[in-house]
Length: 278
Image (cartoon, rainbow, N blue to C red; front, side, top):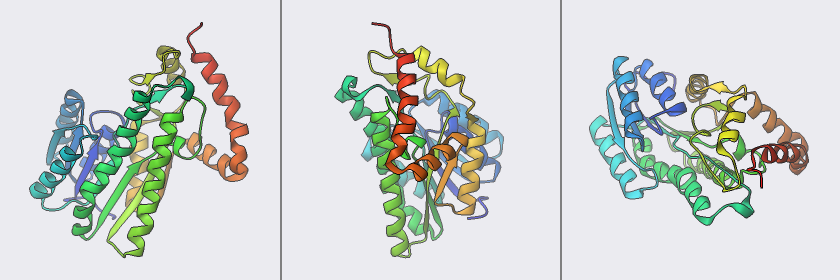
């Protein structure tokens, strides 16, 4: 898909960060937008900005874990715009904590939003993408969907699941000769409020964690969106964002399971820095 003018692009998590930047990037390319976020104020801000670029926009405040709500939204989008061409399942939450100290409720919340939210969006919109005759599905995983990291067990579980789900779907659609391309996005550090707004286990100091993340030389949300936009236009199966993502991907490829001996001590030192003193 080389051109987006007049195409319908769906973005979840569009109220801030990468989702907002993606909405602006596709609006600038002439796309019609269907945007969703749980944060109504942030979503309204994105709507104003994209309309200022001349885009036709519809928006819905929605929780991606609400399956019936997502399916209803997909039907409404298809009815309003007549076709759906690009769907970007971007909404997500962050959680930091060692598995032993992570409550089941926290594990379930991360899986519900980061994995089941992607599944809900995929299943709801896939028939419409197929019907368009030229669809593209983009599911956002993470660098923590490529390699595990101490303190990110819940997040890794969800993002590994997104990657596996997305890659299996890509193979199925290819085998069925369906007119839908599938891209899995794996961002490294991106300068958004995701970590600052994250939850954590009781022994983690979120302020120290956020400060450590803020010092990280990650890419901007607009740079990440530009990389995803280029990946969709080129029809890439996987999009890595940031030098850290490329480095971790290379480390995993070179060392195999031995990558854990390389990344494990790095993660352990970070966990020691952000732990609340006992």
